[in-house]
Image (cartoon, rainbow, N blue to C red; front, side, top):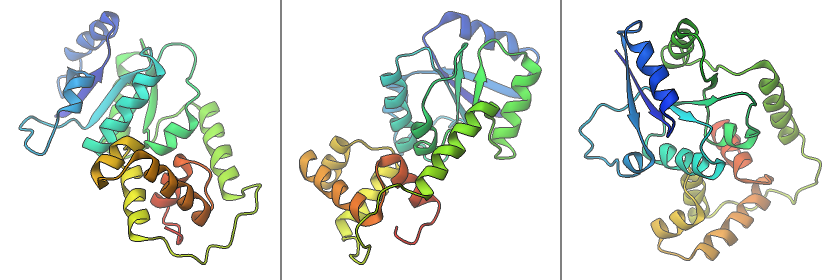
Length: 217
């Protein structure tokens, strides 16, 4: 049994997934929301999802905030974004929050089943071709930065290493500051130092470097 959580505020999407249930008895689709995910902790007694589906018709700020919380609470869960017509321009976020795929709202249940099994069971990614091109172009530009960065002969401090780990979990500067008992401004200064030492330009590149096993990390 595969367990899915759907984050949406639209009745039409809930109705669509309810229509899938009779045809896909091996898939359990439950509705969750922002507040429920934010309150999950180590004592959570429910069944955690294999895949979380997020409705991109929510405001972009809410979607990104949910991605941050999901990655903090469930770092290994697969995430699929649901879009209506136009694909969202979230290339950095796709990389930073390790999005597994995109699905168009209203898709046939057979394709839905195929995508869910590909992502959940085989660990595959499911992106439209034009979006894959943009992701590859972005990663390629990061591998060959246009700027010349300072020498990387200064080791990362213990605090900087801890901040990198928290960034990869999707925490904001404010959340990192709370965990380390420092001010958000101090976190910001440390991040600036990390960017210079590692040669990255933003948080997404930092996450990419961390998970790709770059020696600088």
